[in-house]
Amino acid sequence: MTELFSLKGKTAIITGGGSGIGKAIAHAYSDQGASIILVGRREALLEEALGERDGFTIATDLMAEDASQTIFSACNTLNALPDIIVSAAGLNPRKHADEVDQETWNKTIHLNLSVPFFLAQAFAPNMKANNWGRIINIASLQSNRAFTNGIAYGASKGGITQLTRAMAEAWSKDGITANAIAPGFFPTELTAAVFDDDKMSAHHASMTCVGRNGELSDLAGPAIFLASDASSYVTGQVLPVDGGYTAK
Ligand SMILES: NC(=O)c1ccc[n+]([C@@H]2O[C@H](COP(=O)([O-])OP(=O)(O)OC[C@H]3O[C@@H](n4cnc5c(N)ncnc54)[C@H](OP(=O)(O)O)[C@@H]3O)[C@@H](O)[C@H]2O)c1
Image (tube, rainbow, N blue to C red; front, side, top):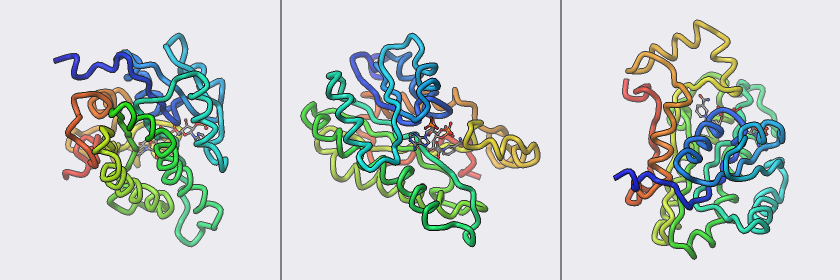
């Protein structure tokens, strides 16, 4: 049974792997036996997150036009094309609809929605050749509901849920599943504005069934499930990991 959840012999690439949710998922995969490739801009952070674990880091800006090809080439050169892709790099500009300019909009949609697609597209041929692949996108509570100052972020995360379904439709016959995790509120750099505000943080905790906000360790089990053989007949789905926020 434990073999079902094993990631031995697998290689996982995790964007945003230097911090927060990406780092937590990367460590969970490494603990299950996977080799991990961590992608982000801050090299020191990536190296610290990798530590002594098996794998390597790619310090690059995913906003660059040819980022997916750069990453593909780096992996290919090292003969380490990934079996598992987690797109956790993201940004939330937290601007009101009246204030969002074109640049903010483009950057948010590009990093949160376009990069997960083009990165998966770059690695899909190899996954197809192996008849095995796992794509895990990161959705949000804002995939389904509007939060204050979330217009660009919410649009990108709404898009992620449909991108996930469309990826599943395109590639599942080739052994590649595509799913998303929709986290509730987890304390990371991205959510500092929420967790620095005790009232806001308590409000979100009270919105859950469990009665607390997320801890990064809560993501390990769901992320391992979606990356392993345990989920081979699960595709095109969004799994809320939100303490029941969306159930209430
Ligand atoms: N925390 C939550 O409660 C929550 C809830 C729902 C969804 N999410 C989603 O979870 C994902 C991870 O966010 P997080 O909460 O873990 O926040 P985080 O710690 O701030 O992670 C964001 C990551 O994205 C990377 N990144 C940002 N811009 C980049 C760029 N241009 N090129 C390469 N990497 C870039 C950052 O690394 P560098 O700055 O070093 O590049 C960082 O590691 C995001 O998609 C977010 O929307 C989070």
